[in-house]
Length: 123
View 1 (tube, rainbow, N blue to C red):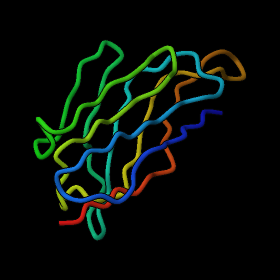
View 2 (cartoon, rainbow, N blue to C red):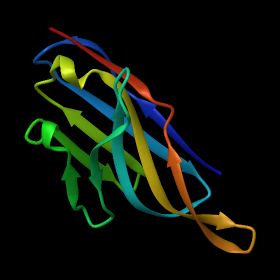
View 3 (cartoon, helix red, strand yellow):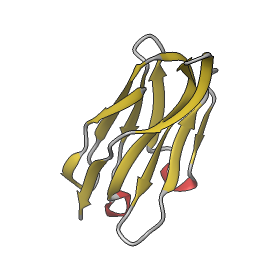
């Protein structure tokens, strides 16, 4: 099995910064894409940022220039540095990881989600 454990998040005022972390563990063989998604109350979950195994990044337009995604392959971790936070960034943030893991007959693909962490930005 693959587990993702998130840390970070909290309550802060507009203009502040937060760093989210997510570490993967379990019978992982390779990690390909890693990313962060968020879901605000009454809204659908949306992609915030993704990073490939080669380090290519992609961001939703609303966070470009404010958020930075990074990964540490040795720690099997992905991070989201969030600066200049605004009330509209308030949401539950989820990390997501896909790759391959040990299976009964060799390797098998996996796609896992973290438990979610609340980020609340007050005006």
